[in-house]
Image (cartoon, rainbow, N blue to C red; front, side, top):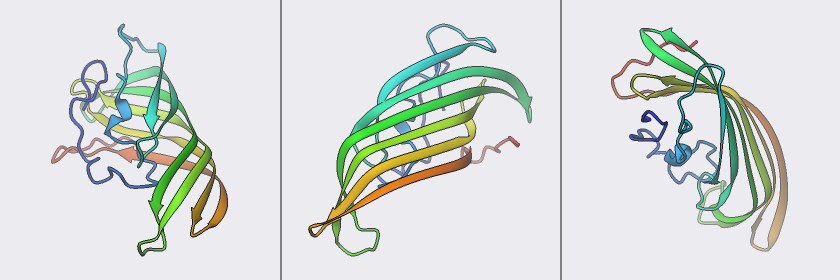
Length: 180
């Protein structure tokens, strides 16, 4: 739940994801920077923020730039919903982390991220009155150049993924509006 400026005032559901290595979900600090600028925005207005953000599952930081546009405000199931267009670019380089082997056991591996870029373009849906984030939808692309090493062996890995995402947030017993 966000306040009028878009600062997180209550986070639910992220506790179970915290610290999950390799999880692409952002942590509760996803909106460390307020979502909205200091001045009021009207439909069609654009704004940008830049910050450093932790790579999910680590404390190591990368650079993130987010561009926004307030596309519209419409009524959905009795709620005034702001549709905010988003474009996000994140870049992580030179990061080394220790991870458990995906094969199980007590094998610890070293992950060396030479370069990872994440690009997301889509829409964020926000309940204007309560500040609840209702959902997000968009396209994500992930490119990574990394290596994994354990027991003296190093395996280079280059990955490119394109994902279409749709996330609907539930808040306890509150019914989530149909966002389709």
